[in-house]
Image (cartoon, rainbow, N blue to C red; front, side, top):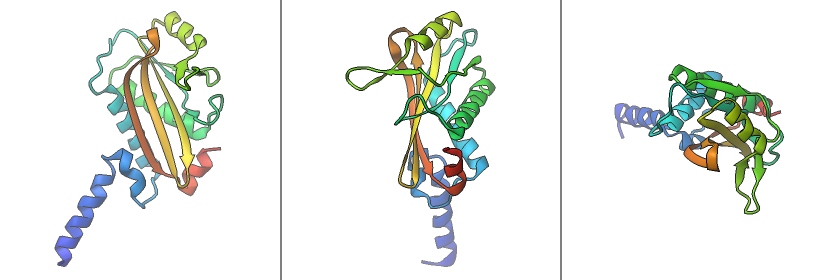
Length: 176
């Protein structure tokens, strides 16, 4: 393969890493701070795709929590929540931050996660049309994130998005 052809294929491969957030873990380049912000912005955009929200009613933004301990978050979980809220607000969504991290979820007998009574009550109090919730977990050298836009009435998932990224030393420090 010639040099220019090889360079073009390399650029195509590397450019595919950003839009395919779910496949980002396959990229060997660690995610820098700016790239992590963009990844979270893309996740917020993905949550909004195909979803109709009333611009007059707020969406509550919960702090992302550790999948293994739903009452625990980290600096990364709080930072990702800030990124998501900022992007939603920049897209015209009225966002109210939910500064709770405990009791966001309750486990159903089947193992499914439901919004807690406290979050449902807060969503009614704020006349919220939806709540953004999310979990993350570390598997080897990859962080896996799952986001959901949930309608409080009936715990209906309006939209969901999953993505992953490499666990660099910088990101590992944020996981504490």
